[in-house]
Length: 94
Image (cartoon, rainbow, N blue to C red; front, side, top):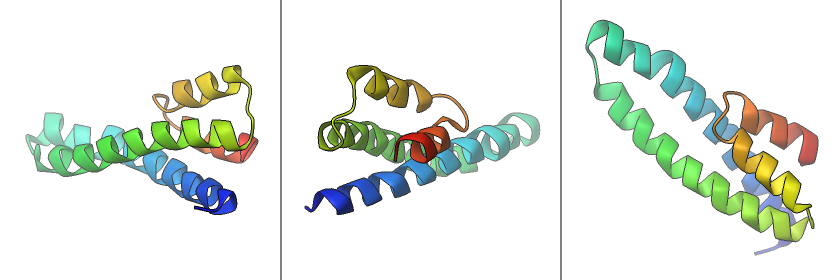
């Protein structure tokens, strides 16, 4: 796959991973614990898990393509578990 396309795919995965994390934290989890509706956590949680793994794999691929410092890769990985973190990486480093 072309390097430009790989970076573009990582941008989209980053955005989708960030959105799924926010959806999970601010909509699905309150529905589960406040209204006893766990169904959305099951669906959104699975999607978020797949996007999370894709984000980590994509970060390693982009690390090699863009010749990031190892510190930048660690920052990208750390931002994957912080709300709004993937958006920061997408804007600053891509």
